[in-house]
Length: 331
Ligand code: ADP
Ligand code: MG
Image (cartoon, rainbow, N blue to C red; front, side):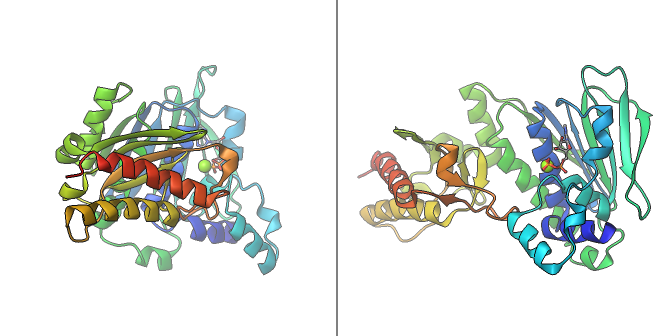
């Protein structure tokens, strides 16, 4: 069982940021509005995520740490089949197999909190009473302590922490209602207050993408039938902003989709040509919404790819919307 878990973990858990991603997605699924992320030594020593979400009932705690499909991995063919589908419902079990994980939780209905962890080879979860407000904490320590080969692939603390920081920027840019706090080695690094109102959103945008981008970027808000594109794109003439601001979300999930990137580059390229500028990289934060049945996400759990059923249609919609916005700065 442990081996199967470690194989599963290898697929999804390659570095501290992958752990953080799984934990934060669980917290968001649980409706959390406050998230504390405490990192030690780039995450290799500790990744602690605390949320104020719905919590996990006592009788489901042990289950949350168990793999649902362990017995299915009996042959290489099975393994391949599962890999192509992605490992779902198994993140906590996978993390438990490559780190020391302590899960503590309380639901609003419960009087007391409980915690669960696995130890030893049998992976049988243990349970004990604990102290915790309503919500969940997942404390992940000593990542890859039992898989030295993986541990060797980790980069410097600074690099690993950078990946976590970037993950939180991406999530904070779309989960505006959530308050985010990130610390590293006990030091506060980021604080994004809740941003439901447009003005607060603008402030969060400035914090994450830079003041210049927040002030100068053109606003996008286009809809045709059941397609909608919102967000910000920098005017082509002044696209030198801090860092790499290229964020594209599809139905609330961060994606790196070639088709969408192509549409953005094309609209941008046309503008640059009109302005007589040489090639530059576009800068944008865009949110595309379309009916869930028009798109397949999770083609691969660790990659940010998406498949549109009407790819050409979506591409042309994005292109047309951005053309129109960028026209505002035409000479
Ligand atoms: P999945 O999210 O794919 O179901 P996970 O292994 O990530 O699988 O989590 C297992 C289960 O544990 C979840 O389905 C959920 O019920 C519960 N869970 C995990 N983290 C949290 C959390 N922060 N708040 C509430 N429930 C959680
Ligand atoms: Mg999950």
